[in-house]
Length: 287
Ligand SMILES: [Zn+2]
Image 1 (cartoon, rainbow, N blue to C red):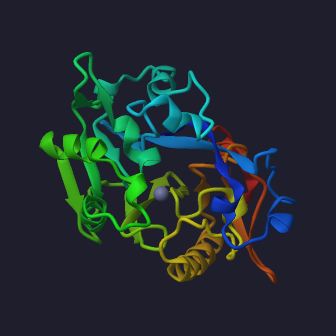
Image 2: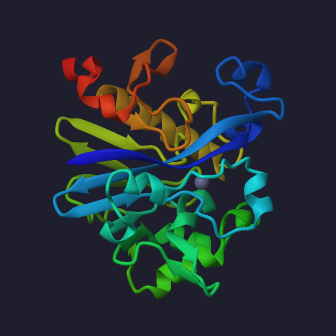
């Protein structure tokens, strides 16, 4: 199995959105904010090559919206998922599967594009699409709090392709990837645990979006059920520490991966490292 981290977007997010009820006077000691109270954010997708399958996890924002939409997110021009894929020698047609953690625009937007005729079409023309059934229903009938994150032009082309697969909790369509369902950030988020050799690499999606979000109170203000997130984080982080999981962060602009460890103050992050340096990490190898 081969794993590649792919940058789809470089952008910014309001620090208050990212860290919820934690005061800026505290979180700003751990995470740099600019003069607009914004923190650097990335959308880091993951490519899993396993046998003859090339599985892409999440896609980033894409480019279907107007300039203002991306400007308020301070998105850098010239960065795209397809560019990052092509640097690995892989085209959109090579992707066999696209797994969506969930369907907020920064996770699904780049799966579709506007063609020369101004119509929306799927980017990954041969891929099977995978999302949880509970989240699909949630996204089609959004609540007033999340409605700005869902777009019909992200969702309907996937359905109309005939290649959309809705997963019930417990369904496991991939040989070496365990899919978990978490509900605190949004209903039915899928978090994949990827078994790669001796490593278990967990793609964190919006469950724990950056390394700074590891301490229990650091829950993004956009989570729909923070108390559910707290219970999910506590259980997961203890499991991750006990089993030396590698956490890979979708949105952390600086820290790509880390292990976590139990301490008297709770579970804390170890030093961060690049996914490309995974095999040289002593932490996971010696336990
Ligand atoms: Zn989200």
